[in-house]
Amino acid sequence: MSNRSTALVLSGGVALGSYQAGIYEALAQEPELSPAWIAASSAGTLNGALIAGTPAERRCEVLRSYWLRGPESVNALSFGITRHALNWASAMQSRLFGAAGHIQTLGPRLSFSSFYDLAPTVAFFRKTIDFGRLNSGDIRFTVATTDIETGDAVIFDTGKGDRVEIDHILASCGFLPEFAPVEIAGRLLGDGGLSINAPVEPVFDEFAGTYNTVIVADLFARDGARPVGLQASLARKNALIYGNQTWYRLEAWRRLWQRDLVEDRAAPAVLYLSYHPISGEAGPELIYDFSLASARDRWAEGFLDGRHAVAKVARGETEAGATTVVRRPKIEAAGADRIPAILAA
Image 1 (cartoon, one colour):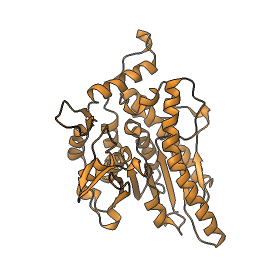
Image 2 (cartoon, one colour):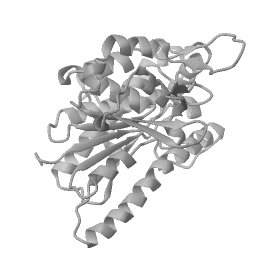
Image 3 (cartoon, rainbow, N blue to C red):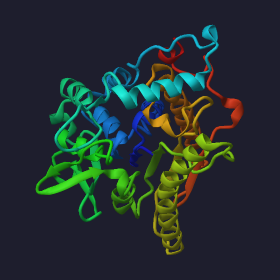
Image 4 (cartoon, rainbow, N blue to C red):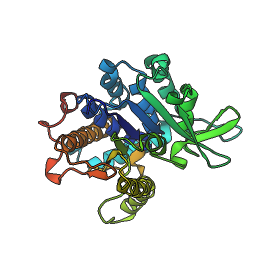
């Protein structure tokens, strides 16, 4: 496998991004699967920039510094409060007052631009990321945005000579009306999730005809339990909209590759990981729950899913031109003996 390459595709999903950080930590421990190329949108772009713009030995550290900085939750059992209620309170706090270190609310203005901005994130990124490194090609970095006027996906790719700066990252996170789009070179660009939430196309275009590996880390799972009640129905709707957006594009490529394989052409192997909401998530508002407890849980889920993906590759359970769904058995729920020490603390 030493002459093969791995690409990591990261979707958007606001506060769910800590799941992808956990996946990266698992992959980083396996040199053969450590990504040489990251293609990302929205929250995935935040993770991709932190990884590509930081020396290898510090990447997990800076991801922790960004995601694991929310407020400590009170002991729910001591006060007779359910975890679900605490997560909802966290999400509502973010909605009304912002989330420290991540987003801030905007006060009264003469004209509307967005409900929130990413000023705390920008400050952290300017302090943390080496944009020279990010654009050096050490890790190829591809950012997906959407032209708000035409609806077209607009891609910036350091592998094709584009330079990615903070404005490109902000544009990729410009999910209307919560976050404002950004004008770049005369085009008003918003969230990549408005067109291609998991930007697999740039990677697949170049990986066609190879036996490389593509790992897709989607923050919305298309599979899930039957919803009971309004909260669960709204959350399930969002997961289906975004999860299926990714899945059916993967299926279209799979059918194309299966035809190519008949003609003896190589095709990459795809591993598809997606975040299954853990018990107690704040229904449809889970993406605005930045609490430390939730971030830790999501990171742990990502780490375990990442290890499960690594094990599948090691056992030869992936196939050229096919998508392998990585879904851990329920018995492998997160436990202190399975998660990184930083998360078990």
